Image (cartoon, rainbow, N blue to C red; front, side):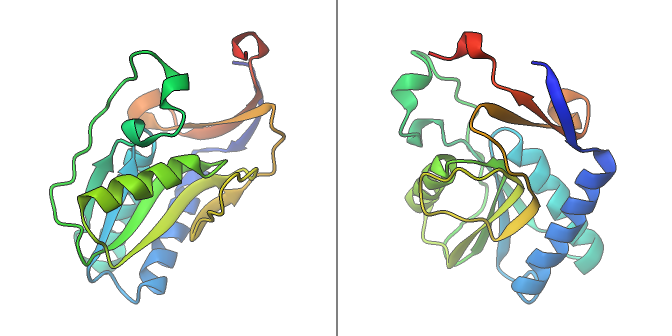
Length: 184
């Protein structure tokens, strides 16, 4: 992958997380019945960072769950003969809760659709909201984020990479051209 441009550095990511956290508190009039669920992989550390920021502001610990949507994807057969399952870990009831799904990039909307299907199999939340670090457009489904770190218009042959210290050793968001050798 050859980086074309850096969209966000570590400070910009932190500011976006802070703003999203404040918007979540404001829109929900506090944090009562609020839980965060990060979508595997990079949505998980982002959800944990938002929860940490909310605790800093509100003084209340927010439950954070981990959601693996691999088996709910509509393109599962196209992904791999043996898809990697990272696991779902939600150690609390979601019934009656205000859920904020957290992911790194919103593109076609298919990941979010799969996440909503997975959530509904686990219980009946009061509401589901969506927090995204990067919204790059090109929706294929009628899905929009409630909280957006940054809107980044892209072409379909570009790829947005969110890098988080917990997985990649660095915090930044970059854009690159799609590797045409891997495209069928």
